[in-house]
Length: 90
Image 1 (cartoon, rainbow, N blue to C red):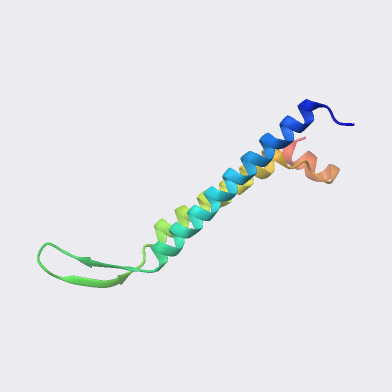
Image 2 (cartoon, rainbow, N blue to C red; image 1 turned 180 degrees about the horizontal axis):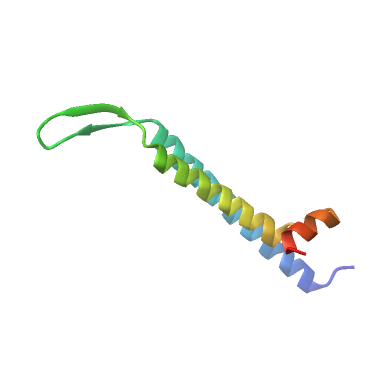
């Protein structure tokens, strides 16, 4: 039998997981839009076609990696003793 605190914690974890999943999908959608390329027209009328900014893509990918890593560290219990020692720096 589980007590109400365990159920409440589980629902909070589930709610947080859904929020982070939505954030991840939003970030992936943003990467997709950035990769679709953009056109640039300067003030003197010169046009540069098909620009992809790799620094923006790198920042977005790093942000997704850090978001998922944060969730992993906070909510997922390590399955092995060695993994626990690495995460806890012991």
